[in-house]
Image 1: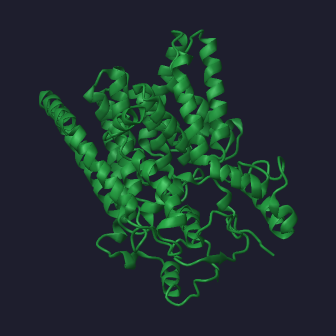
Image 2: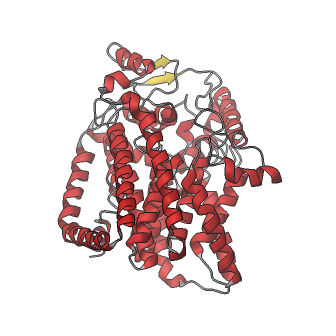
Image 3: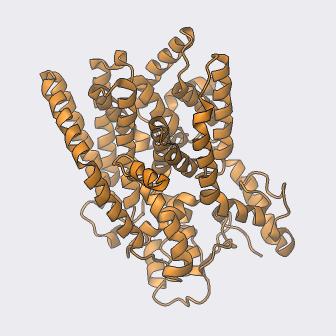
Length: 528
């Protein structure tokens, strides 16, 4: 009965992307050891199961979808001409962004911003499949990262002759539906608020430019929002599952989220407010159980090889890694790579001075050199539009002694980001939560704000089209990089019984066992 109740609650349109991991994560382990060994490709099992879930959700939710659409038509029909025009423009610009990025998601990864996907998101799960083993790949630093998302999505990525990015697109849509649903909860189903937050999130340039790509930041953002929505719905088991996929997607996140949670609880105590902890037992227990399943294999393996479950933190501090005695050269390389990775955080931003702190609020939004800035991706105009209203509301809440958990979580998250790796993509979570807070307040739903959001959305649509226009109407083979085509040619003649030495690290298209030999790369270890 409990299991049936769980699946009933999980079968919803807004939480459909969660099923990619509910299905894909266990299927990966089946593929690894039983279903299709040593080919580098997966069966269609994951996609078949996912399509069955889509059908079930449609059958279950079709009346609700129809009712929501009728409510939308009724609200839209009651609006004045100017509001209708603005909403129509938002829908048109949204359609452009979503159509272009949907088209891009069917192409194999090849863009410069997809380098991480080509280097390890796809490559590591694929190489394990080729070896029928979860043992560490001796050449790979990234194999020590926490990669449950990567392994859970691999059965979908690797089921086509050319690697696809289709699952990530579903997560992009999931984000948009979730922010509307969360705002709806906080405003008693205000369509106006939903329109504003939709435009703000889709107009967030740093986020939308990732739509249609193989990057996983959108997947991470989705799982945090999904966990919040499930928690607010009282679906604590589902919330625990979704939060586990978020928390264990990066090595630093367990530490960061624990610190943020403790700070938020301290603020809660200062405001002399309490939480119904008895109701949270199911949530916390579910999170711990799912964490053991989702992250356990990675944590245990990392501890065995590197002496720490959370590489690159504390290598060799808690346990003598197996390589320390069996392969000193490799162990020395692991220690060096861990040290190098920990310094990456200082390669972004303009330092941590007082001046840099005040300047970074503006610098995050705009490009500095070409289309990027020192924080990686410019966040765009919609971020700036909500920053002022958010801070006004935050200090107003303090003055009135009101505790807003989303506001405090966002600010503490931002503070931890400032002292960590200052990459703008790691701000997606607090930024989207800030937008939810702002547009849940009717005072900020003004024409001038709507005009700004329209302009921001138009700039983002233009940027998305420009980023993808070179690939329009091209078949998959023509968008591939020279290195990817070389790997596909090598696959025709290589000896698949042993690893082949290759001299590129972004080797996701190698459907044969490889041994990467690259000097001075954080992703590649020196073996001898």
